[in-house]
Image 1: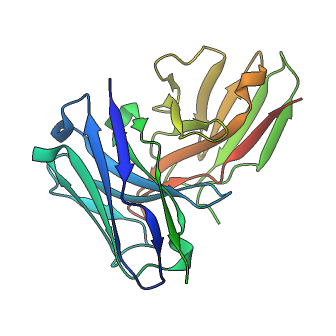
Image 2: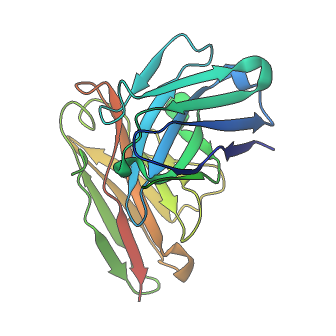
Image 3: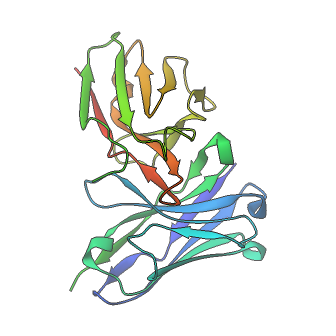
Length: 118
Length: 110
């Protein structure tokens, strides 16, 4: 069974940093690209970042470019999101999702909540 | 403001057919496949339709997807109370080099 478990969320002040993790199990992790997607309270889904299976290519939403860094450690079956210079508008539930290419993002975690507030 | 445009709400009575639209442009829906995600209240999104018109594993054939030009649609026939959820379309955007979502449509079963 595929399982994605996010962690690392919490309350942080504006300008602060946080590192999110996504622990993957139940599939060959390095065979699949991965995404981070976020959802602000009461709002819709917003794609944040993407990384290929071997980590050699990454993409970012304009809203986080230069502040967030996606990475992965295939030896630990883990995906990460380093978030710096956090803003109040980054407050959201952050999901990791497994990408099966043209077959869609087939599995999502339950999310970890990030609150940016003074 | 989302790159893909969906109606904020839709509704129907049990047994009816409801269609949710997703309008984009040549740089996203016009050139690329569309995926649809269902988000039940208080839960994470799940894949509903992939590659524009393919049902994900376990999704009943009451759900169908289609595309014409720069617009895509999700149709739900034989509406059931458990279909009450938020629905999101998504596609890759060649101009933005980013994945984009619609703003989501909240479906209410009356």
